[in-house]
Amino acid sequence: MKSRHALIVAALVAVCSGASAGEWQKSADLGLMFSQSGYSGSWAGSELGTVVWTFSGDVAAQKDLNVSTNWKNTLKLTYGQTHQEKETASGKVWSSPLKSTDRIFLESLLRFGLEHPITPYVAFAAETQFHDGNDHPLTPALLTESAGLGRQLVKSETTDLSTRVGLGVRQRTAYRVATVQDAGLEWVSDLTHTFNPQLNVVSKLRVFQAVTSNLDETYGDDWQGTDAALETKFSAQVSKYIQTTLFLEWLYDREISDRGRWREIFGFGVTYKLF
Image (cartoon, rainbow, N blue to C red; front, side, top):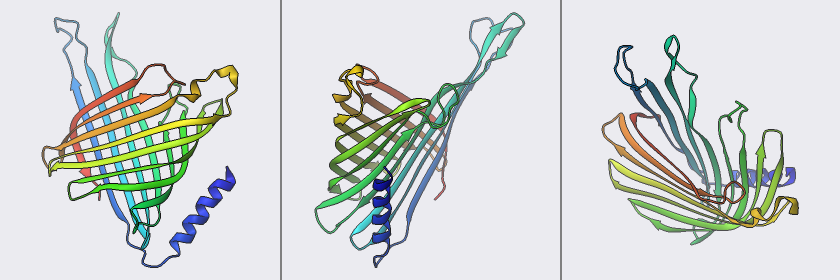
């Protein structure tokens, strides 16, 4: 593990020493979605008051390290809680908040030979959450190191579509659980499309086929299944600071469930473009 990370650091140092390095191109969009309901003590009905809030952050920074090398970093954050009243013998009281959504996704992508249609790359990705159900931070986590070849399929004022295929090594970590490591083939595709100045969509497809794992036969052969993750986010800018978003995610991983899993998050609230 240390040797692989050392090679990545050495590669970064080498490309950073090249000429014609550009400036960092940065973007950061922060959002806070909020909904609330409340009822008086004399309200005739079984309804209970709720407060739901969700914070989201999409941060990106990329730079041309030299004339043929680009380094792009992406960070996606989402966290939300639901607060709800409950009935007690003494009346309505607010219960402890429940986590409604929690996600941290970080990806660092280094591409070489941009003057050619096929571009070699190395990448690192980490997906985790702020805490689990027992408040243990940054667990569980999935780390992926990969390298291979990529291609820009579409590049226009409104559409950016790219894909890459390579070899990958993954580590699954969890609190007080032995790390599971596997290796295999990875396919990643990214799409950004702007319908108009107020409406855009960002989508990412990740597919991983493990060919070897440190799990023995005691755990069965679920690790041999193809893992897939598809996420899509629609964003509609209502005004300068008001935005509505729809996030859809579909996951399939036999080590977690034999069935596909999905989640949907719809929000309407305040957004702020940091830079």
